[in-house]
Image (cartoon, rainbow, N blue to C red; front, side):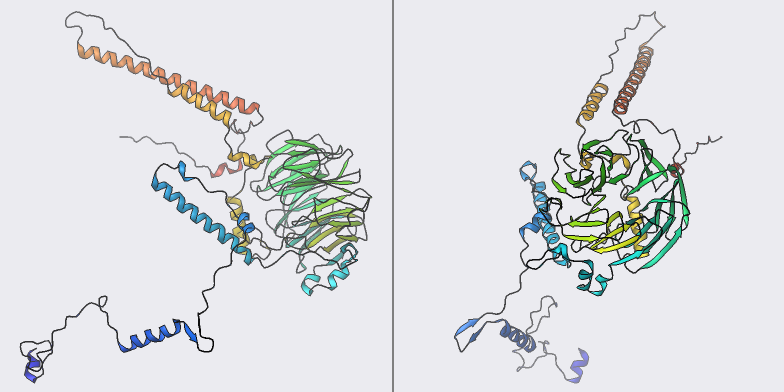
Length: 606
């Protein structure tokens, strides 16, 4: 300020030294930036320019106001998609006591409704759509040959149709769960594993003894081979990993991926379940059905379906010695058996030249559909989209719908596709997530095109055909952590969520008997003693000693009653057939080394 006065310059807010001409000026009080409301020329110009674009303009030619295009709205989701991803009806808020929890429940319903809508909108991301062959007028798709279908496809799809001529048949085949790798096993010892899409061979060797069946395990780097005497495990390079000598003379192999169980049926009628994660047999029972040749598992609940020579299908669980259910499917011996990938339908074939479709969930005595053929079907298979494939010697047929029925005996409904192989068909398998039917014959292998048979969209977290080595390892670890114990394999998997009402009532009654008993009341009458011999303090102490002794006896009686109730409950449970949970395991387990070892407490010496 002093420097400003010395130079003669004056500040506009200096009212004391202001001239007469400058007395109209008033001091300005500065404000914070958040309180400033400054409008400069640039701001005004920018605002006017912005308004000119937003304001509706008038068309001079027609004399009407033309409004700008509105903001595009999201397309409305169809109702059938909302019903597909619906999580059930809303919860009634009348039963909720306080207003706070009522509002909380309403907000939760809004979140659920939003989640359902977003899940339904993801259908737009599924680019691939299933498609079938459509014939022109006066034509049927059964007349189309594989060469004609391959000639009208792109190069990548046409390359999936090929044929392998092999000399060690008859052969059996298996695809991996994601449909990328193929495993072939010849009766005369030939075993080959390769990536059938890129035709890259993983391994090929001769076991020098007969090979009856092959099966992939939980990863595409391990597989099991049922040889003449025992079952052997091999890796991707053909190196022998293990020999399971407890599985002898095995005819059929099957693998339960969510339980890590390898199921095997041998020639003496025994069915076994081997847990490949710990290397132990969780079940080994004699079915009494003789030589087991027909065996498939239900993907929905893990139950093993075994076909017999009397036309009866029996269903087995690894923790029950008797079959869970039996179905009389054919009046004659059975020739083929399979379960669809969704676990809803059971398809059987017999010597009566009929292929029957059963509802495996309801276990009805009448089939849903019947296919009547000219010859008995020796192999049947169902794809992910419900396409039925069956073979009669060297002749193959495919039907698009399981529930329509048909057959070639009376010519009511023509098949979807026909194909004749060069030799007898011994195994059929649809490739997952591909429109391919794998056929193993007596002289090799054929990959046939079946448009519309596979699921076009896959879940990469469940089955990823393009997974890397790191993704495969992570998937294996997650699968081990989410492994389902074999005790939960039942006909109805929803039983685990239900309440066992009789057992619950018994437990409640036992608790009432044990915990609602009052200790006995003790009335002590002290004996009158001479003066100096007794006193009130000594009498009270004696009375407390007697009370403590009676209380200890009462607690001991309660503990004994608890043990008796638990013992009777375990005895009833074991008499019902589940005696493994009640009795403690006497044999040491492989996983005992992971249990903590309790060390004895050392006494500190003073």
